[in-house]
Image (cartoon, rainbow, N blue to C red; front, side, top):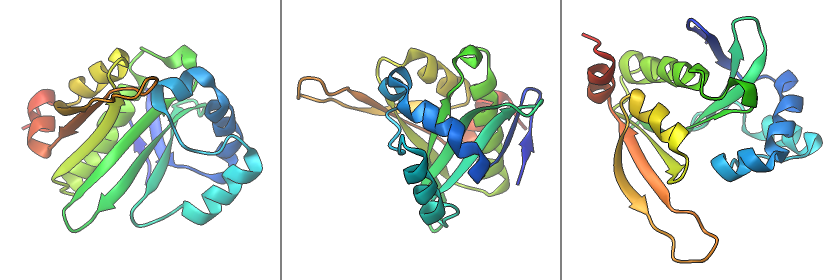
Length: 176
């Protein structure tokens, strides 16, 4: 499966992508914003990849420019085929691509495939309340806030819960 837009290509993650992912997994700023739980060691990440990809309930994709530069990743987790729903996480690891629409287009491509072609009922996500850039990206793609997980422990971050459906996605993007 490969999805191609005007700026990005979304394709299944491959073992050759892992070395770049390790750099992202070690980046403190990325971890603060996304809190991705993937290993920061190449050997451990390769073991994780071998054990988890592909999986019926988990799929991870590479986001690359049309020129072939790997700039991020996107995962669908907790895929429930019976209820037709999944959780999404997206990360643009190459910071020079932040705020330029690459993540938004990658997300739009995945949502189009899963909501409109695979007929999923709902895609949901969790995002830290202070990650305004990510929240704007999600809202542009039809997500709406459905709740907040407020943390009472010092140092813990509040989490915004968001979801979209085929109807919300089509309405936001004005798809007939």
